[in-house]
Image (cartoon, rainbow, N blue to C red; front, top):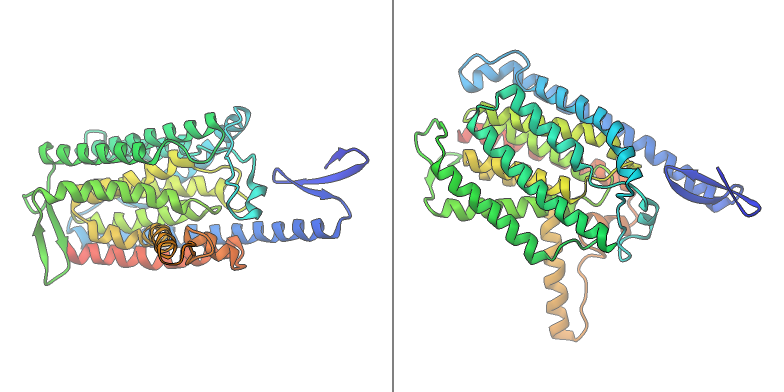
Length: 401
């Protein structure tokens, strides 16, 4: 509580709710506390689901790869990464706050998001390096695919840092110009494609540029088209997660599930990349402990772009683009909602002179917010959808490999 003039105001989670005794603000405070409890329950459920799923995969992994793997092959790096990222948050969030690295809230966004003003951002600075490092330590930095995926992840994180700093310096939420960001993402994706073509990566198929698909399609050789597909995946994944990062816990939780789905899918092809995937998922969970409702930190473009780059790198190294599309279904839907909204607005403006909107606001999660759904409930429903997609993506990857 703080005193302003002759009135005592209630402060909760960094938000100023109004003078004590005001009925409206007491109702708002009670609503926020209920949502915080809901966010904790959702977070606990997600963690329990991921741990059980990974333990089951570890138990049956010998049937998947037909080779003996170390005990707790996937669950161990997941838990180590989650614990380290969580601890790092307690050290780094106060530093971000003291440096006034705060999120700039969009004026055109939902009005309730004004309560998020002053929340530290660029959380990707502490949990992305942990995910990459744990993967390197567990799988070995001598692994070529780990080094390549780590390089792509950190390159996309660097683009995110540039974008976040540009937003902070100019005190707006737009970042660097879109064409510059896309150019940099395409450049990294193209570099990764050419690196894949020249690197000595072991593959059960003894060939590169192959895309495994379920029967009866089998293996498809794409040749030079593989380069374009890789660049497209890097750009789409990075921006898809970036657009999804609009509610507390939404991007972090769905990204963790996408990484788990991809880790299961690529296990028969590259067990090292599976370790990389679960390490990144664990880092997302460690971050999520600070990002659940009401968030004490946001990942920023630093985190969202890096996560997209990591997912795209896993798919490019193994050819598992189809499971990537499934596991990242939430990101795809969010990105499509923005594209459809823009196209619909421009089309109706040409025909009627005034642009109309298909959704109340894009991306899609803001549409649900404005329809009256509470933030934790939107996140919980998205988690359920993402859980189903992650399991199905892992299944499709296994039957394809």
